[in-house]
Image (cartoon, rainbow, N blue to C red; front, side):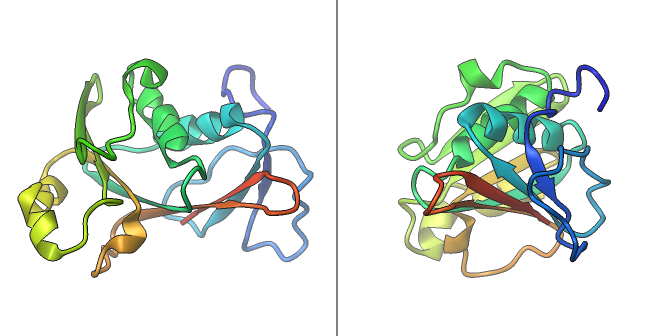
Length: 174
């Protein structure tokens, strides 16, 4: 592992490798066009680092759909991703649960951080300008993407699950 890539303490499982062991050291993310990767996060810091590693390979325009239960780490992952785009995500990224959309201007361009948790209809999506956000030349991060009634085939999908027995997070990036 190279010094300075910021992800050397997280486990990874290559979902395309049937012999993969979740205890082997993290390997850098493959190009975003390859099959999914599975990461095991032991802490918020790990989740942040996984988001940061993912974000370092992301270029606008891009859509990232985050799914996972309440408290899974979607906003922590987003903090890492936004940090990779050139700002201190830990300081500026906040869950947009009540504002619905947060906008961050980074050296890499504009980032829209959308939270669908409180939205219930396509009318609600229209009210926040969701179609325009998706069409923008920006990085668009959508929390609670499982609430979308339609798919976005070109989007990167990140599922964050809490392992009941251990409390660890399992991040599946496709």
